[in-house]
Amino acid sequence: MTNVTGESGGLLGRLRIEGPGMPEALARIAETILDDPETAAHASIIDLAERSGTSTATVTRFSRTLGFKGYANLRVAIATETGRAEQARWETDISGDIAPDDPLTNVLSVVTAADTRAIQDTAAGLDMAAVERVAAAIAEAGRVEIFGLGSSGTSAREMAFRLERIRIPIWHRVDSHTALTNAALLLPGDVAIGLSHSGRTREVIETLAEAADHGALTVALTSHSRSPLAEVADVVFTTSVQETTFRLAALSALHSQLLILDMIYVAVAQRTYERTAEAFDVTGRAVDAHRLPEKSPTRNRGRNKSQ
Image 1 (cartoon, rainbow, N blue to C red):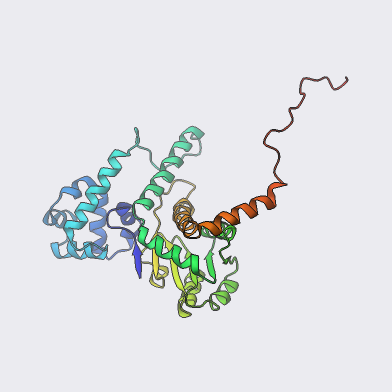
Image 2 (image 1 turned 90 degrees about the vertical axis):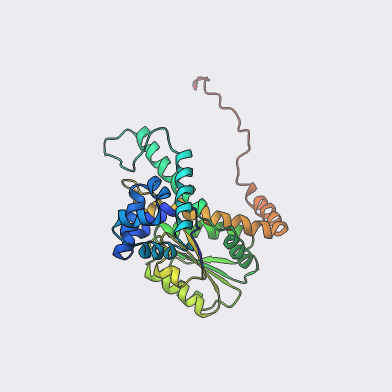
């Protein structure tokens, strides 16, 4: 399985999501880092162990759990990310809290900051080699199935629309039984993509597992790289989220999911350039008659209706 979280990108976002679910000692280390990332970036392994009430061996285990060779690599990743965050920091700190009586100008700032940070963190942790692998498989696949429920279903539907437009044989299933039965028809060389912010949506897990049983390449998009969905996937793309009031994590994951799917889509289009260009031309002509002219006739608004 290829786990695409990245060693230097989106680390703090990953700790916010996965930290509370880690074993107690590892969770304390994650909390210590998140409490003061800048200090953690310069702390020795002994300092971090003492501040988190653990041991150096536990800090080493924590580093390896996150995919690093050792604590030195983890510390570099923290330093890289805190430096990037400092450079991109807003002039004023913006929390994710939105009060019922907040003016919409403030709400806009909060939502923009949250979505921008989620996209930046997701992009920082995105493995281009994995994107290339999935895009190459989709470009050659006889069949692609994509499945997600709720807000993840919105992302799945958008991806299906884009790939259909360039002649990729892709299907988005809105019914779990239909998704399962069609996953059972996949063959080696086909692709199945499952989306779930939590990575614990039973229907998505079952569909991807069914596809894997029949030899298809399985791809997961989730905010939890150690989730059950990630366990059944060949390639895992990890999304970052930034919650705000009224927009919980599953809803906030939408922009991050679309970023990853858009990168895959563009990579597929690059690989099938001539076919894609021809498809755009044909489909554009098909709907051209339904578009209004670029210059609409000017209305004579000042004319008196009685004349």
